[in-house]
Amino acid sequence: MKVAIDARILPGVTGGVAVAVKTLVQGLGQLVDSDEQYTIIVDRVEQQAWISSFLGPNQRVVLTPKPMRGCAERLKRRMFRPLAQYLRATVERRVWPEVPVSNGFHESLGCNVLHFPTQGFILCAIPTIYNPHDLQHLVYPQFFSPQTLAWRETVYPAGCNFAQTVVVGSQWVKEDVVRRYGINRGKVQVIPEAAPTQTSTHPEPSELSRVKATHDLKQPFALFPGVTWPHKNHLQLFRALAQLRDERGITLQLVCTGACYSPHWPRIEAELRELNLSGQVKFLGYVSDADLRALYGLAACLVLPSLYEASSLPIFEAWFDGLPVACSNATALPEQVRDAAILFDPTETKAIADALLTAATDHETQRALRGRGYQRLKDFDVLRTATAYRAVYRRAAGARLTEEDRWLLQWDWMRGVAQ
Image (cartoon, rainbow, N blue to C red; front, side):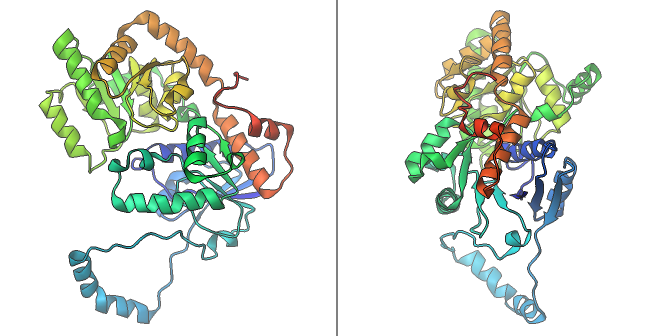
């Protein structure tokens, strides 16, 4: 069986989606006990270089062809470029997005199944698997531009309706997709991601020292990986840090990783200045896999104050490295963590401050959370996730399912007992 995966994405900008795609490709590349072959589709040389660095023996990368333009069209474009630039600068275009239709490229690859894991979707003649990831735009529309809202509400319903299978990361998102888009629940498959750091090596003490010195880190510190999107709720976390300092005399360092989302970044900088936290909070930007693994080894706890999460990869990563977790009680997070984290109301400053202080300093609680995290992580594994996706591909292509495939397709990942 041949599977195509449309992976036109890059790390550092798209947050957890890129990490999830990378981890899936790596996991599928290790499933060499069967004859599946995977074609990874990219449209930029940078994507090709990134993905090629972690491909398995059963995988290859292909670049989408660039559209050919004749001499007459090139001349026309040069002649009318000044007019087009003027119109773009003076006239607001109000064009409703359309669902893309295949031009034949995907079908030409000769694959039996096509997977769209990055929220984009193209109508084509191949059975498709679609990952909407979440419907956050319907819960917090104020965090999205009108153009993005229009795009999502055009592409997402189409992907969910026309795909053979819709895959989401939690039961909570499954119920949301079924309710909002009227999708048959039997069509929606829950497959949580696993800890991406499972594919990287454990840092040596010298590596920990290097990362600590390079970034001038002062322990203890709390770690918060995540692009600075508004729903990640950095501002409320800053207020909790300021409250701990001003009302209880406790100064706790915070280290943040992930790309700086430009539209929201000025608000974050302003809040840091207003609360006088610039010296207490460090933003490291996008860091390498090795450095991120070292940060998990150095931190006192993971804090995740998000207003919306479909499934949190940093929580899996924290459990993998024995890091206590304090996270919000919003959306799918209680389902994901069960009793393996301290839950708090992300809209209450004091609740965040209390949870953060306990997770970072209470040794008895930290010990208990480590044990529960390790136990909970037994349900989530890179190879198990990849094997479940392989079962979905096989079912979509009408291929024979193994006993393991059937078990994975019916297993309740979120409420089942560790296997």
